Image (cartoon, rainbow, N blue to C red; front, top):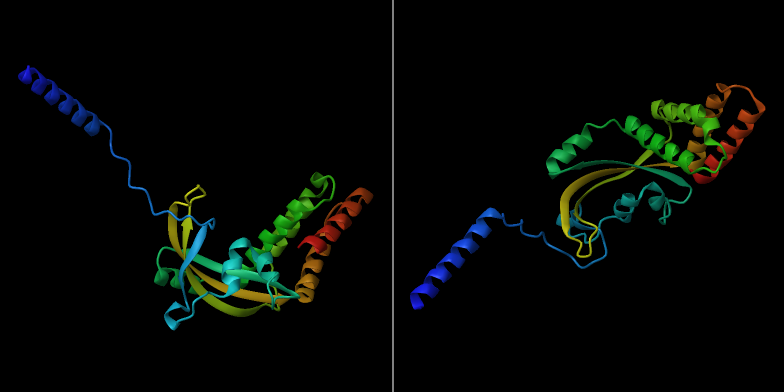
Length: 222
């Protein structure tokens, strides 16, 4: 009887080992955090100097330029953050040093213009499709005067997946350049682009009315 039980135990053990061998173990889970934040700042340019917190604009920039413009000290200004992302600090700094500020500013502004038009309440947007495209292209090709580099900073971020435990996703470095311009100065340059684009559209009453609505919506939402 004891021999029979020993054989059965051995068979069960062999089967269990076979099952383990045929089914690979899942990778170990990444570190988790209970916070509701989707990221945290691990270190930044001021860390070695004993500065605890990175400048407020660096974190606000992750929500977009308008988040920075709502901060104290940015009233009456438009903001563009030219940022470079990478896996290591020195490589990211090198990539950032190779950027051409004027080109990057125009690119970021063209994205903002496109987003503004996408959210504008102007009725039938199909009527304005070529006008929108012309404006966006003109902005991306333009060189804007009046921008000033206010600051440059780097931060290391740890991102978490959007799950209940906020499981680790990735770490990254960002080198950020903060550029600002007085709203009145940029508004005037954008107005000229909007006007020139409108002059190239077919001269119909419906088209001209739609363009004026688009300009009005643009000035309020940009």
